[in-house]
Length: 172
Picture 1 (cartoon, rainbow, N blue to C red):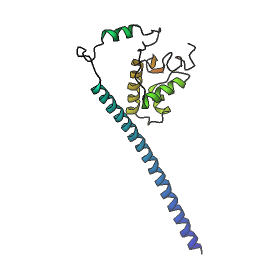
Picture 2: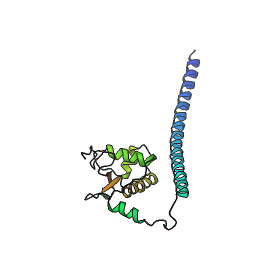
Picture 3: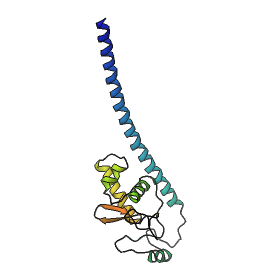
Picture 4: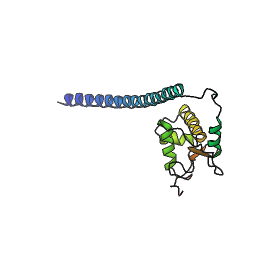
């Protein structure tokens, strides 16, 4: 009878190891799926943006990259706050990781570094992800969504979505 119990214990241990290995593989597949989904989202956004640029009606005398007279007036009338980036009159729409980063920084009580944002958004803390996020955050500064308080420390721009620079609700 003990030999049957011994065989049962071995089978149980073998199955337990198999379950642990399958769980590890499942987690790896989930991570790969998340990476693929983020890439698909970025590619989709890029396609949409290129399609929009291709179909945009530009005046015949306008040169790409040059602001027209009306555009210059809009930039001149944009509010300027000391210590903050100039906020363009119309900010580009937020999607995907850009939107997630702005929401995260809007709800944060203190400025965050790119690595902190990557970790908080559940991405892998690897150099490529961190550098990609840093570039994304710097672009959000240029677009007027964020400010870089000191080198590498990002926070929400004053007045964005009802949030002030420190992450609390704006009073204006």
